[in-house]
Each structure stands twice: as structure tokens, then as C-alpha cells.
Length: 462
Image 1 (cartoon, rainbow, N blue to C red):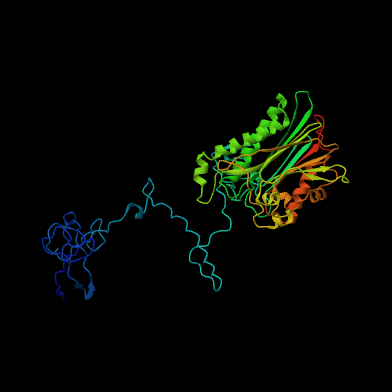
Image 2: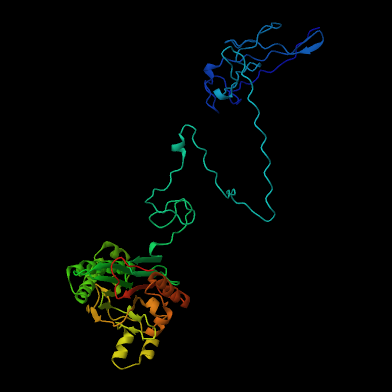
């Protein structure tokens, strides 16, 4: 016996989002799906019992008409449907299985290797962000490049190479572009030997830069007699650009002396003119844009002190402005040494006026306040020059207060200087700088040693 179970008409649903539709809808009210491109779904076929067993009737093929299909007809499954009269869901192209040119399915992709489980963090450690590696691996070379193209560029011969990694280039700020190491500045420690003369300058142990500078050289007088020149300058720390001031002054004075002496200018007049040239060079710094950029309310114009010596076969000329000094140390240490300059300082004025003795004046905190210097704001430039004719050989010590603070008297300076200073001036200059550093190195230290009399041209240190 055949019996038919009553079925209710199914409510139409959107083929895209499965939301119920109303009669006459052309678009889904929920997702906006265009219903006109989908044929109307026929009503579900009733479940009928055949030979006492319950079986689901085959689904009819999609037809425009919504009338139920006749019973017992084996309808084919609609193309592009899910087998229940609904269109297949829309896929992105990448989600569909691919086929080869013959229509066969492509071989499956190899499975990805399983990821190792993350290692547990140590107890008590919190990682708010991924930890960074201690070292970053270098990028693999491009196989398309030649060996010359793939090789890292080496610093040019003219470029500075880092003193730390020995590979990176040093940028204009003084740091290595490879490892970031700050480089020692060129003026932190300087040494120069010119014939029989030698000079050494060091930043010292307390200052952040070296504000001293020097210039040494040898020339000949018109008659062929040798002449040695040494200039030492000390930048005034309370002024703007003191390191530039000392460098400009030492260069200007040294160049004038080496030019004027061969022309026959008397050494003492040449020294006076050299101090004036140094003054003009320092004054010019006040008008440069760099000074305006660095000028602070409490600073003055660029300024420095200067002391120099010219040594010939029988004459010793000294010149100075400020508190840098010249000492005479005879080769025969049984003969007393002497200081050849007088400081332009508060202490020297107190002693000259008879208000204090030298020990009291230099013990005062105002002792090193200078009363003479080179610079645009100097009250009045008074170059000091003096000539001497030593009757025996010796060594002329030209130095800044960074040295004589630790060997103030002539006797102390002679005691600190090696006995063979005339034969080994560079070694002896190093020894004197070391003496100041061992004493505390509170200031920049610069010293030049000039043997007297000036030896013939071509003679140098032994």
C-alpha cells in the first residue's frame, strides 16, 4: 500500500547567505545577492514509501516552473548545485582545485614541515616583545652578481678606518659607520719632529678635548745659518672655539716666521710680526658663522695665548702673550736654568706691584686669570719679545701651563727633563708630557724642545 506523508511548503532562502526570502524578491535583503541569476528552486519532493521502505525521492532538475515534479521520475542532479537544488557556493579562484592541460587533477602539494613548539620562557622572565638576536645574519649574496660586485666595498685609502673594528669608515662626526665606535680625535695626542726640534701635545686626563696647538719648523737665514722655530698656543677655555683659536694662531705665527727669516728680517722683529699675524688670524674667527652658531651668553670671542722661540747659531729670541712660558735648561746641569718669560696674569701683576711674593700670588685662586691674550675682545695687544745670547749649549723649553703647573720653577723643569734632551728631543718631550700626566693631567699639555745652538741643516735627533 502506498501512503503519502503531508509536507509543508519550504520557505525560500537566499542561496548565498541562507536568509529567508519573500515572494517577489529580486535581491536578498540581507546580503544583496542577485536572485535573477539563480533558477527558482522547486518545492521539496515528498518522501514516499516504496515496498514498505522509506526512501528519499530524487531531486528534480532545476526548471523555471515552481510546480512539483511528477512522482517516480528520476531527476538528474542539477549542474553546479550542491545536490539539494541549491547552487554551489561561490569560491575564489585560488580555492578551486587546479587541473593540468589534460583535465587531470594536479598532484597535491607536499605537506609543510611541522613547526617546532616554542620553548618555554625562563621562570620570572616576561617577554613583552619578541627577543632580538644577538647577531643579525648577513644577507646572502645575489648569485647574479660577479665576485667583484658582491664583495663588500673597502674604505678608500683616503678615508679614515675605525681603530676598533679596523674595517668601518669613520663619518664626519667621528663615529664608525660599521660598529659605531667613537674615534679618538686627531688632536687628542699629537707629536711632530722637525730636524732637531720636537713637540708633543696631549689632551690630558680631565679635559674633553685638546685646546692646545703648536707649530715647529726649520729654515735658514740669508747667510745660510740654520734657524729653528717653535710656536705653542693655549686656547682660552672660557671663550668660543678655543681649539680653533690656538690652531689658527700657531699656524699664522709659524708661517710668518718661516717666511720672514729667510728674507733677512731680524728674528726679534719677525717674532713681533708673527704675534701680530696670529692676532689677526684669531680675530678673524669672531666673524665666521661657526662662531655665531656656538656663541653662548657667557662666552667671549675666540681667544688663546701664544709663546714662541727662534733659535739661530748664536741668538735666542722669545715672544709671548699670555701665561705660556719659555725655559732655558743648559746642557751642563751644574749651571742654573732660567725662566725667560713673564706671565700676563693676575699673579704676575701682584708680584710686580710688590703686593705679594710669588708663592703667595700663585697660591691664590685668581693666580691663573690672564691679563693678556689674542682675540677680538682683548683690551690691548702688547706683544712681548726678548733676545738672549747664551754662552753655552742647552735646550729651550716652550710650553703651556698644562706642563709648568707640575714643574713651575726653572729648577723643577730642569729636573723633570732627561739629560740627553738635546740629542733626543722627541723622547724628552714625551717624558715631560708624561710628567704632567703623572701629576694629574688637569689641563691640556703641550711642549716643544729646541736645542741651542741650532745645529746645521740636516742634523736631527740621535
